[in-house]
Image 1 (cartoon, one colour):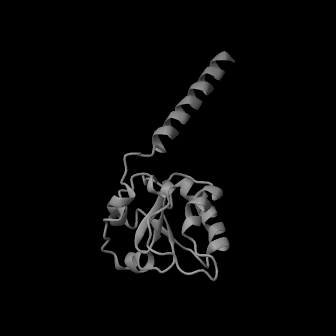
Image 2 (cartoon, one colour):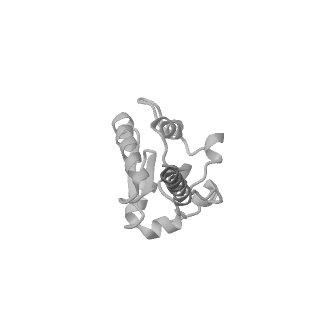
Image 3 (cartoon, rainbow, N blue to C red):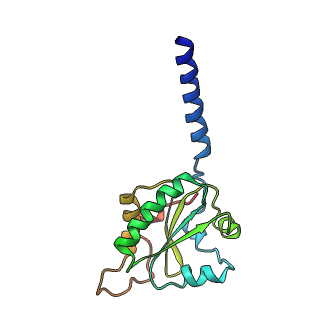
Length: 163
């Protein structure tokens, strides 16, 4: 019985360690200023994201990624709530490796908020609905309000990093 518990405990520790290594996020990623110096060649990305008059929430992920699938549920809920004021774009890094490389995506999922062609905020990892909502709210235009100007991001967004 003790041997079985020891084996189960060791197995649990290995699983936790493997998860930690697999889900590790690189904190030495690009700053928002560096992200805004990127000029992707893909015309669909320029038209859909960079030239969109609305703020755009971009998720870099993959079909095989469990946390990305969980985040997909959050994004669907956000689309229902804010779809009239926010565009949501999912980018599969396996189908768009050049974009992933340009934005130095080395861990997924990664969310980026684009407004007026610039990255305003970025967050890596599985994020709860409330946290994603707090990420996008500063950039959403209220009905009847004038479009947001191309101003500096709020202080909290300036320190955001992408993986």
